[in-house]
Length: 100
Length: 140
Image 1 (spheres, rainbow over the protein chains, first blue to last red):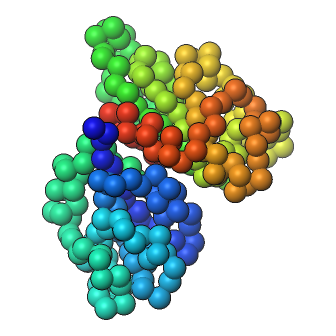
Image 2 (image 1 turned 180 degrees about the horizontal axis):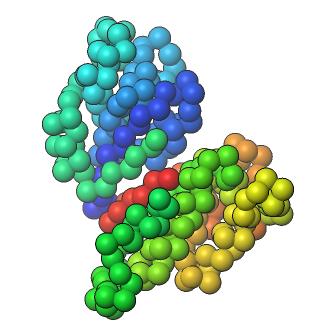
Image 3 (image 1 turned 90 degrees about the horizontal axis):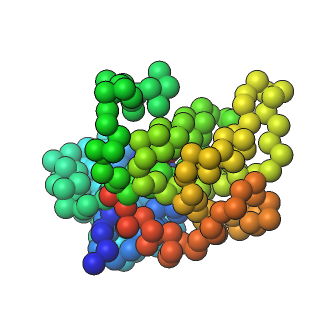
């Protein structure tokens, strides 16, 4: 069995190629955690959510709230979490790749 | 402080029996263009640091990191050392597993012929699979 990876993305996809790089190496069993400016990737009004479709995707709620993003403006499949959740995800996946 | 010094801080080369270190498969991912920021240079230092401890390293050039591989880098006039020389030196340090992302090359209009070292070109599927063979991923 191959190892799963927790991918963290902290850059806005509008400014950076990191989300695309993350998606290119994402495989079933992996998880993506959007944090800091990475949370903009979950905006329903943009095509980035098409790339995220079918992935297991989490977002740090405090980062989302801080940026004034409303839950209904974000993709429904996005699972909200906090830093405790981040730790749990880190334990759950044998590998962590930080796309920063 | 240089990254390599951070990595080695608290460790003295003299007091460590290197044969006692079990090689841990580690991927070092180089994703930064050279020269604009110090990170590309620091990352190559980290690679050499790992190599000094005889670790099992694979190096992946991804995204703008592929620009580190271009031939005829002449950085003297901008007051920097050529990263090309450093990349070419990797094989001297027994870093033999070098991979470059095919998509990243194509996106930038490059091919293997443009690169300064013999390197394995991998598609995203193969690259993703290689990452899962590691114990540790280091991203720069």
